Image (cartoon, one colour):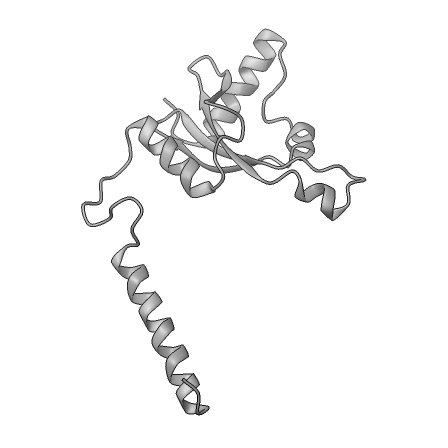
Length: 143
């Protein structure tokens, strides 16, 4: 079980040296795929990455066809890194982190928060924004 991403990187470097395979965290590969470590380790073995393929010669329109995707990765005890599920399986960082926590068994249950509904604090912020916009329209003589 790993406590930090540094431990995972070191274990993977040792694995790469021992087996002659590529170092997963190799700077050039991470730069090519625009890979970022987004969180972890969860449960001592899972972490989240984001990837977005762009080409040095790509236009903005071409780059837009390759949206950012998030993946859950697993660091094995021998230092090997694998993808849990599919590459870029998640369309948001929050969804990938929630999945990693759930898979690792570290997800905290929040009895007040139900899937698909906003938390109370978000509802309060939304109401405050709505009230501010109504009061500013009234001051201009509109409703």
